[in-house]
Image 1 (cartoon, rainbow, N blue to C red):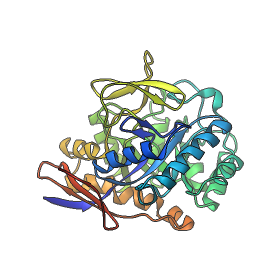
Image 2: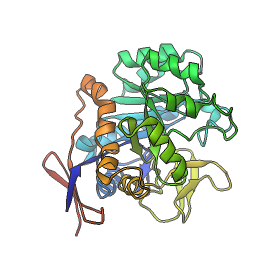
Image 3: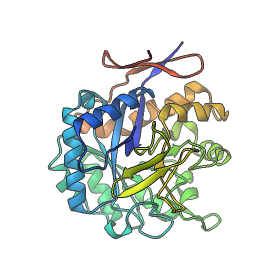
Image 4: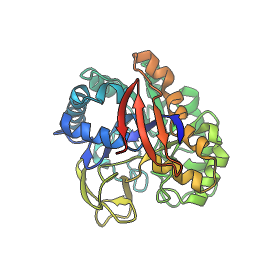
Length: 341
């Protein structure tokens, strides 16, 4: 039996058939999703809302915040939220599945208006730093105790350097949300890999980033500055089929890829965080223990200052694994969230 700290997912849009971007989300459904996440070793997460209009974000956050408050596991498992958009690059290839028509330039006043109605804090916001006003937004967000990440962005080296100087500290799902055709060297992936001031999040499902490419990125960024995330949607820990994701229908295929039906781009993932850990270890990029650190200690460290500013508790928890690295038991603050039967 192996015992490690509990896993922490910085980016999860839905799970086990439940869409966190649903304005009709209930506490009962959210609790089922949290229970399913606990079965994968996750003790805490940042539920993630994607690009939408202000009215839609208000409604979705209201439902999510109420569900977190009322779900039995919500108080301990959810320290805050991740807002991925609407401050993203609307160009094809960069926007991914996010609706371009709802994208706007970075606007801290919008974040303030959203936060004013929430019990839990928005701890992380993903933006495209090449957009007008990005540096001022980053500084203002940092003053409010919000971590700023770069994602869905055509940021070149100077854009990334300015963003980091202003206070950006993360790269959201690096290697994705980027157009396929890029300058050979001066492109968003190389720019973020080269910037030591950025921690980088990776979706290690073998679909979002080919394993050999992920290995190169981990060596470039170093394991110490790398974080594993899922970017999971409702199709994670669920059967292949059609699911809701924000205003879209998405299809989880047999191989685990999630796309809008007929669309080439990915729309989140069906990855679970325990599988991400197993994948990275099995691909020989690091040991199992090191992979766990990238899915537990590193994401907590990325949020530590912001969480402390808001009085949000980042709880280590504990996971017991079988010899074949399957989750047997998940606990947090003395409470058992999951125990294998």
